Amino acid sequence: MAEVRLNYEEIKFILKCYWKTENIREVQRRFRLEFQRDAPTRLTIARLRDKFEDEGTVQNVHKNNSGRPRTSTSPTREREVIERLQQSPRKSVRQAARETGISKSSVHRVLKRAQWKSFIPRLVHALNEDVHDRKIEFCKWYQAKCGRTINFLTRLFGVMRPRLN
Image (cartoon, rainbow, N blue to C red; front, side):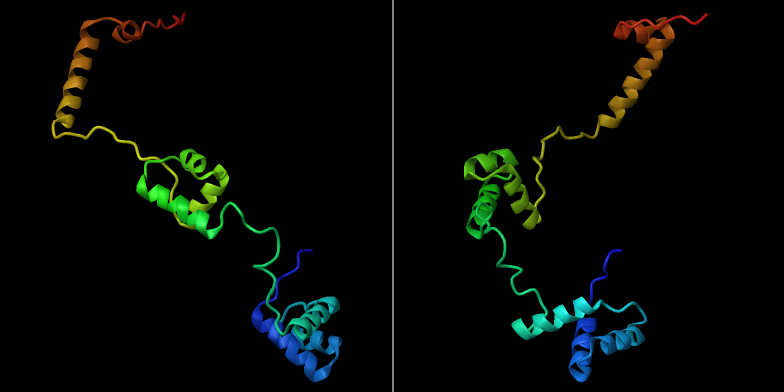
């Protein structure tokens, strides 16, 4: 069964009750009465108590300092990637990775943290005012051609449809 995480209020309640009673079973009983749900295990309560006594907090103290240090996406490298992309916003992620010497996935990570979208805008032709008229003119031409020429579409594309008997 998946264990439910305790929120800050529940942890605070557990620690207060423990120091009042110094009895884990009593803490579990009071927790059930207070929050109308299953109490944490004895081991969980003991670990919370020990962590608070050792570190003075129940927050994860080593969260930002643990694990492998970031090398390719350090703050200075992040700034470098963002500056390069601000200078030439049409640059692709691959080009930015090649120029900065960082992997493509790290550049993606930097862009995600900076809330940038990684796409290259494409220039397309502008729609003029006469586009609608030209579309209608083409449709009229096509209808007239289909009316005059038998199998105009198949001749146009050079494809013959199989005959159904």
